[in-house]
Length: 370
Length: 252
Image 1 (cartoon, rainbow over the protein chains, first blue to last red):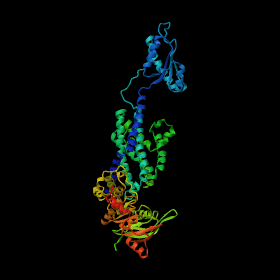
Image 2 (image 1 turned 60 degrees about the horizontal axis):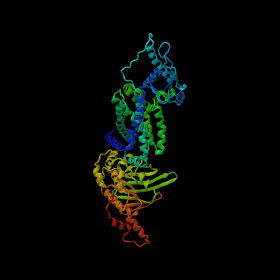
Image 3 (image 1 turned 90 degrees about the vertical axis):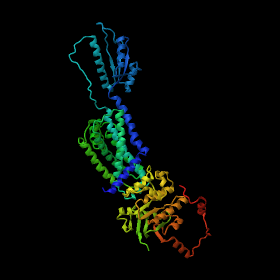
Image 4 (image 1 turned 180 degrees about the horizontal axis):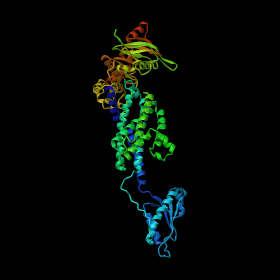
């Protein structure tokens, strides 16, 4: 590249980066929009992982003081979220059928009455629906464990086998750490595809690209300038997402930040090629919008943006492995959560580079100035 | 006789079944203002765009400064400046930045202040394009077209839609550009503009050039054929009244 070309590209990069920060709509879609998603997913995920709770109804039909104590103990237990408005099995069944309740715990009339031996006894009845068998069994096991403790305090018995569970001090991945890579992938799509797809047809409609074409500016110079300025803009806006996630959602970035930035830069350039191809080909919005949706929506759903790919059937996983966005999301996840280096994620880097070559060849061929 | 800088020989353009430009030939002399006149749809813009490398040439040849347009479109772009019919520039970019950008497209770095000064827009350096009036936009478009100091300047209907003050101002600008040694080729359908501005004009209709000569000679030829206007010619017209009352001062 000669000195003149370098001046051309550097000037275009400088001016279009400047222009981005004057464009409120573009800032909304690249910064605010992913931030909203971040907060939605962040608040869904941060609650669920550490304390799983079951929604139960406790129906106490007994008058005994033991039954009262036991019911209030269940109420305080963190494992159970007790719905206090329910006081009959019928209303509990109604809620269970709608999936709003996991189980009904019934303390029968004679529960907690003293037995002949002089200590309280009784049977706890747990009701759950067919579809909620797993939750029902877990609840029964938890209750059984609690009753065992009570039993052993009432009746001295030998316990040759016991369990002792301990919490390690290591911090494991939260669901948020896992979802975060998908959100970054989503933001890259917004930046790289929806940006150019909205901008280019408008530039063509007004004859702005045509005017540029009267100058000796080359398509490749224009592409390189676009790629560089989008990378600068992308790294700046994505750092905002990282900072918010670290501060608010306790995101833990294990990997090397420089390698992460480099990997994201390559990813932005690759995905931007899709936007350049669609936006550069389309003469107007009516061509650009449907084509970009056809390409982007399957990628958003299949590449692990909003839910992990391991939940998909095997054959779908195999197909989605090769979509352009999949190695991007997988790579970001491997670097941030597992601390992998660029050399470790060779398959992802290789796949991204291969796609970049293919996408840019297409973009270059279909580009139209008007 | 001055050397010619633009040579057009048997130039043709076809859209579907229609011949839009039917084998026209003309040459533009170095340093003149050359006008292509004609009603809408005469083929003026198509002709201009073929010379400017913006449309493929279907037949014939065009050379600018001795260089073949069809074969060396890249070289031609450095030689010519273009003002399109409706100039458009990207938004959220200041005039200063736009000039910087256009110069960079030619691989050049320029003193943007000087170029804005030339078209009387120095105080608008920090403005965006949508903050300009029609006349200011046209003037800015001229500055943007000249950033690389071209030899020939093409203007497509430069004064369409402008008020009388802005038109007069633009004429002065065009004459100034010619005085700097840049050859100007413009299209128009305003006869007063052509008469006042152009050294020579080509009158075009239905894809053909009917006649080429200086405006003075064309009028003389018509009078020699015994033409008389039906109406008595006043020494002033309504535009003179308008300019007299509102002044020549630019309004934007």
